[in-house]
Image (cartoon, rainbow, N blue to C red; front, side, top):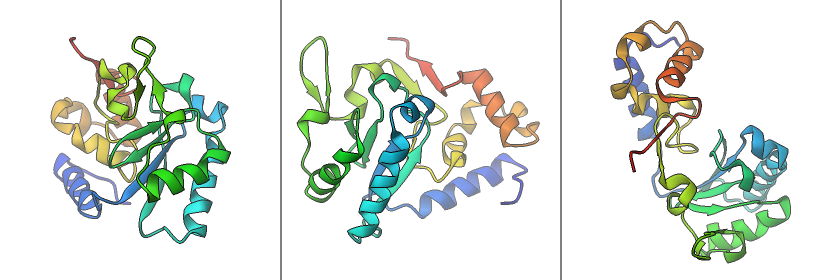
Length: 192
């Protein structure tokens, strides 16, 4: 990939990436952050890839290992997009059920949902989990939907000090500038 030399080039790359995406295609995102690694996400990711391939679902389902979803204590985390269904503490043995019930049949598996401690209510959608409600995801808000970091970074370029961006010699420097402005996880606390 050639070095991007301007915000315009980055925005063009973003538009190209987004143009290739089918917004209705199922995407299974598996957190592959450090915490989820400790809980076995690598095996879960491989099991999803193998199951999708063996069932001939490659044209209907994408499997993506993503960066940290942030809720490490509940990992490995799996989010089924575009709906945003969040399953927690997923194991390799859960993969066939998730693929068959949720991805193929559009059914929710209650036992794998997050249970709100205050209300006892099962929460189906990632954005409804209280842990995430006080956050505004900035840099990696589309975690699992982008084809690499460029999409998430491009989305936030209007909020980033463009001077720092234009003086970033490489992606590492750009990410360091974004972390400086927004924090290590690319999130800012909301003012709630």
